[in-house]
Image 1 (tube, chains in turn blue, purple):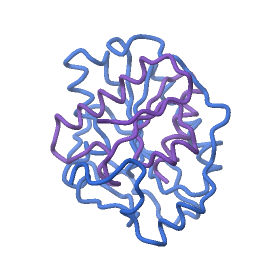
Image 2 (cartoon, one colour):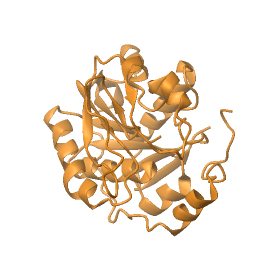
Image 3 (tube, chains in turn orange, blue):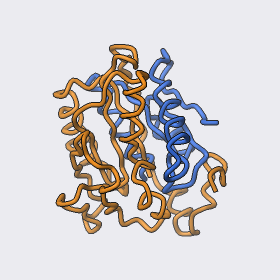
Image 4 (cartoon, chains in turn red, yellow):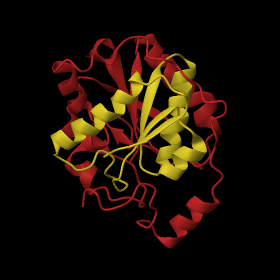
Length: 166
Length: 82
């Protein structure tokens, strides 16, 4: 199961999804921005960003009815119990069983804590972010939500971020 | 879609001074969208770090992704896992 596909293989999807992926006009990042790390990883403050639509108990779920996709995000504190996170991503294009069994699969907060304890990572930031990735109309994400998310992490003094799709 | 979303968020973090690395499930999306640093993994959607409850595999993917932060460029960097 683990290495069941080649990188970039879209044969796992249904025909309508494959057709959509082929026809969709992807938003090209140009120019590609580049921030060199300010410090070595072993000294860096690291944050996680997932697009798995995970929320903490009590946080509002993501809204699948927003046209073009719900580009809002939830803040997950570093002391959160990963196994209590709830998958509110409604996309049927992927199997939700893995994340349901272990949210670290798409939001590896426990792994990041382990790497920090082992010294490979400087420290785990106090806040992490969860988005829902089914965003086909990206304007609001790019002009409002992503800048807002970035400001929040800048405020925390984050040096580096790991982003995980689902 | 998730691959594009992480890429676009990463770009904004980089514009505000935060170094980023994205895990990517569809290499062709990363080639078109161009996140600054990305690790393309051979796992299916829903399983970006390999397998649930496999801490060693998840940690290895995370560590290999974070290792791309130590590269000097040129941007964009798109590497394969495994």
